[in-house]
Image (cartoon, rainbow, N blue to C red; front, side):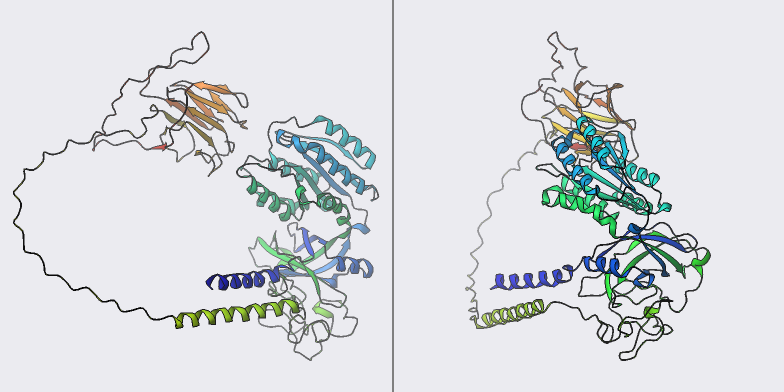
Length: 639
């Protein structure tokens, strides 16, 4: 019975949470929000709702069809232009991950790229495509404006193969964004986008995806990620996939995972998406002195003057200067619009129009919050939605009045589907019956029998005390034993490094890793110059110590000599280990004699420790230096 109740309650909760999420596609995305200047900016938006796309193509886009909501100010749209109707240039970067880990997907990535080029064939000739490769370094191979020349360039780049050792993925995505913004500045209009083909083999945590996405949106560059995930990519790979998704969505781009099955269709669809980009000129007012940032969202209205699509809020840089600080007219509402519940919408639009789910009233009447309202049954006068120059709906009914697609009182006529309402009611009824049955079952259970305590027996007569026994001699104090005596005493003494490190690290683990990746490395040090997995140290029973460079970016050095990527060498007591230029350690083994030179056979020889080492018992008063110990001893044969 308990299991049934929990199952019904869980299903009911899933439906309640999932119902509004089913309509979470808002149909409009803000792509570019450059910093406002003198109270003005130009937004670039993409309309993704098919119905609204067709309607705007047939009836045209005018300022009264779009509304802006700003969190801490007011705003109104003064002009709208469709990018496809102008001769503005379009610039695209096709960037290929050329690191060795991408070798299994290299040919398949170029198949996808050629599909994209084929889709570009019937498009206008003002579209420039650059081909870039990156790994440890970056190279731009060509910039072409015809499909034939672009295909020839792709063929040459494909023949190069994956020749670079590592991937500096986020760093070179940032460089590609800046290159696209330089080739097609935001002031010239048009579009800028970067399409990256990668396996998400990022090893550096130096760049934050949120900062990178914010920079791309400021420059009006969309980042599309085509990710080949494969199988068995190891620890941390799922987190890198999530970062790629956040980077794409944060810049207004697409995240395309090849294993989803429709990746090629999604990639070629990026060409058609350029036909649904619009520029909106926006004027701000009511900006508070000293304000440097804000958030806005955009709402698009259908021909019936009802909400058709809206965007999520986007942050941008606001400046309290010039016309931005003037007082907003009564037709412009201040602040964000309330959230409409039950339909999956997020923050809607206010500004010069009522937010989704509220009715528009007379332009001169406002509520205390600053948003226009209307009394049910009263027609609004003047221009629709309070925007200067806006026309009234074709039917002649005021915006938000009953009969214009809105219920009296400002609630949207669209709600949950009837079948979902019936299902929720039925589940609630079943849950109530299950609870009643459970309570009835508990009431019908017989009461437990009273517990009768057993009679207490009389205490036995006191026995004579046994004869006194001689006290045992005091036990000898236990000899202190080092719990890590399996391996010889081995330390990495810190010579140079960032603040907060221990004086030395006592190592008693057969194989441990050093790097900057917290939670994954045995010794994680927060240092930007370290790679995520920088080096691996091995310790054996006879005291031999080896270190291996794990293809680090800034190198591993033993006594000043830089190891080749993947090279493994022996380290002797007293030798210096340097990881990049910022971290230097010295190997110390107090219980071992200095290492003997290698024999003629080339095998390293190390003097054996004493036959029976006696661990000294530490004094209670003697201070002990701070150290950090790894507990797992080495197992198996020594080298």
